[in-house]
Image (cartoon, rainbow, N blue to C red; front, side):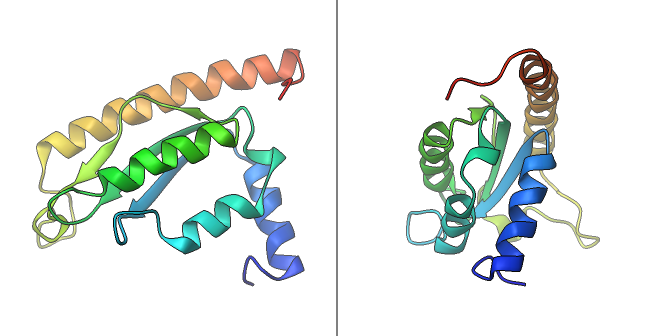
Length: 136
């Protein structure tokens, strides 16, 4: 099912609504977020609100950081809570070993911090949502 089909859109919306937090993984495409990711974000409205999100990007020299910064703006507009730390895999083809593992200790460390922050925010925001309706 694609996101543009009614069934696919409803399923995607349900999955987003049931989740407590998100990690968006993106390449940088022409200095921007890929259109398919933007379409996915725009397909859902209220279900993103008051949920934390972390970002992992990859690409060439810039490692997708421009896409991450654009996603931070989009996440704010969707009323999401963006965690501080992110992971950027610069020169992505050089960052994985033969077995497919990440061969970049700094990226592994960054991912650990991102996930710790995401878990904290997911707990805090989930607890708040259970007590009071988000006003946005």
